Amino acid sequence: MEGSVRGAVATGPAGHPGAEGETGAVPKGRGARRRRARATTWTLAAVAVACASCGGGSHALASSAILRTDGADRTVALRLDASATGALAGFNFDGFGEGRMRVHVPVGWRVEVTCTNESTMLTHSCAVVEDRRLSPYGASLAFQGASTPDPTAGLGFGKTARFAFVASRVGTYRITCLVVGHEIDGMWDWLTVTAGGRPYVTT
Ligand SMILES: [Cu+2]
Image 1 (spheres, rainbow, N blue to C red):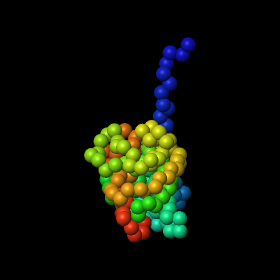
Image 2: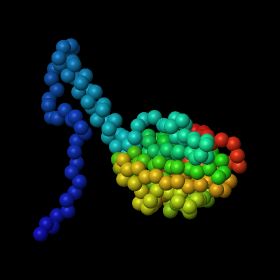
Image 3: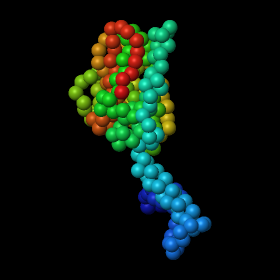
Image 4: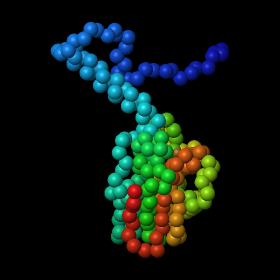
């Protein structure tokens, strides 16, 4: 019977040049090109390691990508990319956390959310909750059906889940991740349900 615990295998950064010794200074020609190539490899490796937990890209999403409106149906499509950038150590939606994004939707409109976890390290979820005091344990859903499935467990890397709800009450709510500790680490934004007007996003 195996008595040992199999641990994670540590691997070097992709493209590691290995134990090859440094050669003398070669100002130009193949040697210089090789050094430049090696420096680029190291830079890319460093970026890959630095962003291992943030996943996603380096740019926050544009408002036009975050919210799309079908006025005839009184429906909005809201895209929430969890950990879209490295902002707030990846605790963001679409690159925004700690309330820096505010989604405005008129009362009675249907909100169709597409939630994708871009983090390679952490699970994340998407939910709309009552605007109560921030807690490591999250908050209650503001509208029926307003979260991804099993939101305290969250979605794995690259997973997408969709949900929809009707913004049935005027008020201020939070868009949040309900994985324990994430909201209080900054992974929340605002949803304002307005008495009228058009849907829009401010960042
Ligand atoms: Cu999260």
